[in-house]
Amino acid sequence: MLTWMAWTWPTALVFIGIFSAMGVLTIIEIKYPGGGERKGALGLVTTRGDRLFLTLLGSAYIFLAWLGIFGTPLWAPLAIAIGWGVFCFWKV
Image (cartoon, rainbow, N blue to C red; front, side, top):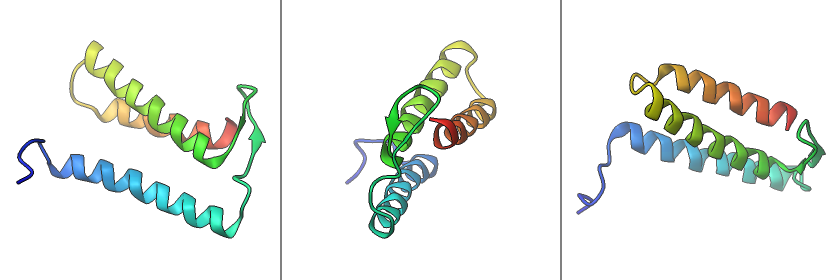
């Protein structure tokens, strides 16, 4: 039935993680409305959702660049992507 896409456990975990992050942000937004706007290091005024989007987009580019340049294994870009996410939510 779902053979049109290679659904593996790692793929499912990525999507579960993305949707869980969106759910957590929704709950935070309901509890503390306003999006937590702030002006960060890049000079942009961002909300929590903006920072999540920048984190996901940057992580995708990190993994694609790593695959294009070095190939596998992907543990190093995972660490870089986590660092990028921490930077985005802390300074952007």
